[in-house]
Every structure is written in structure tokens, then in C-alpha cells.
Image (cartoon, rainbow, N blue to C red):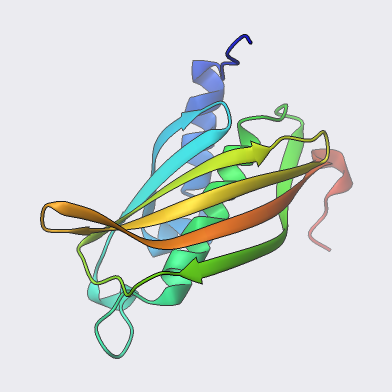
Length: 149
């Protein structure tokens, strides 16, 4: 089977687009993009932590959802937008390190409905520990059909 490729211009756009709005406020950074895959990271600061010092579950859930969405974005034309329909996340253990890494990949590529999974890793000194795994269902929608009204 022929490997599909995302052109450099599209990769650059998706990496820049990933970091806008609320995601920029959170501090997430796009690391890598290729067909059906997207990776991101965030340097952890005190505002990412909850009352007990662990990284907040909302930080991990947002990262898992958003990164899965961009893995789906790599598989659709530039005329499409991606919206989350549903996601489920399992928190496997508390995260407390200095960086979170998220890797997402498309596991079911459809014309309209796409399913991706995300894995979130906590970087602790010299180890990367899997702390959360999410299953995300997304929908590809033509840009012209979307309005924020």
C-alpha cells in the first residue's frame, strides 16, 4: 500500500493553526505532523497543576482531544474543518512531571467521521510515563457550512 504524504505547506499550516486561541493560552506546541498522526507538547507551569500538585486532568483531556483533531486534519482537504463529536479519556495515573507529550493517530479514516486515539505521556526526569489514553470521534465538515452564530 502506498504511503500517503501531507505536503510541507499543509504541515506548516496545521502546526501553526494548532497553537491558536485557547490552545495558545494553555501553552501547547505542535511538534510533528504527518498523514494520520500529530504530536504536541506542553511545558508544565504551576497554573497547569491542581490543588495537590498534579497536572490537572483538564490539561490532559484538552490536549488529547485537540491533538486527535489535528491528526484527523492531516487526512482531509484544506476545504474541511474538524469538529469533535465525542471523546472518552482514561486517566491511568497522576501526572506530575515538567512536560506532557501527546501523540495522536487516526485509527478509522472515513469521509465524514474519523476516529483517532491519543496517548498522553508525563515526562519525569529521564522517563516518559503513559498517563492518559483517549478515543476521539471527529467529523469533517466543509468550511462554508460552519458559522459561529
